[in-house]
Length: 178
Length: 333
Image (cartoon, rainbow over all chains, first blue to last red; front, side):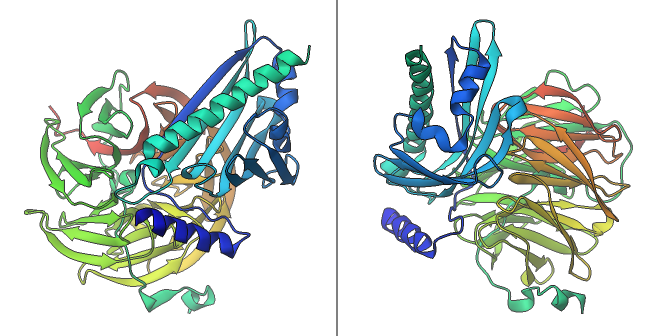
């Protein structure tokens, strides 16, 4: 019932189109993943710095359509294994090698979360670089009794895996480059 | 009428929901009290704890165990109690600030988040999923009334001078004004997309509503209700508070990781101060010297020198701090 309701609402909202269509509950969850890479921060940043370039390094992203470049408000739509999610760029800081973005259009099939914001940052280390990817998100079914595949644990697992796979993708891509 | 010029939704009282709390902002009604004797109480959602720090010392927080997932907290002056809100568990906990003991747990059910306490100590608690504010008796904590508000009521604040309870309805993008005598919504005004948190200026001269998705803050004069200004602040504004004397509004931008400072008369952007990661709640001391910001992702509190517009330090508290309140400590032992 909850699922049916959520999906129905989701479809309705999708049908409205265009606008940000995400709603969520009161209690966010966190995923934080990092990876050490034996490359200079500049080399790492050059790979990931373009908001529309995630398809080049994230193994779960099949394709990307984007507009707006790296300007605040730029948008990208990621095609994942089970559908699309649309994101928008909020805060781009080339000087800090960091940018933050958020989910605009949810898709529980593609990613069982109702809203997220995230920040990816390249940091210098003694031996090269560290990439840190942090996300704040909410489970897909924000009702009082979420089913297993739409609960907090499902959201945490999916988001953690997405970040982890992406970081491994960055490392693999840079390793293959030499 | 000023109100109509701004196309307020006015009197239609749309109903639904409960309210939500704004912990920090309700903590300091009225005039500044004697300096010094205050504690900062911080609700850490992920840790299931509340951290308490003396505002003078700020080292080594004392941790109080509370039920899981405290998403919000306020200090009720009328009850002289700190109240934590446990959204997932549908619980409130009343804590005696002197003993730090949980005195009572109130099973409100649903998905409580926003909370305010009026001059009589009645509790106004929003239910995020039911779109209502429920009002509880200050002695028995029995349900007195359920008031329909907008969709997904987030933070709630009590305005002691204007005599209103104000609710930010996150998914409606509006604020509901409740008359605490009649226990009815008397006005619902548009604010902005994702209206979430409310700051209150001294004497209820202004309130500031942080609109998360808009990246704006809406300044509203409560009495008579009218839009004063809407100002762009940064990315994902999740908290707002006023300095007491100068009535600058400090807005916490979660995605930008900073606090933007805006004078209100006239409106002037005074720049921003970088804080910790994914900041949310903010409280400013009654003397206007310090601002405290809860940094959700870094598990600490930023201490800002208000006059210098600088972050002085970050103090580790516990995991997932979101809401904070200043509690008078002159009664503390």
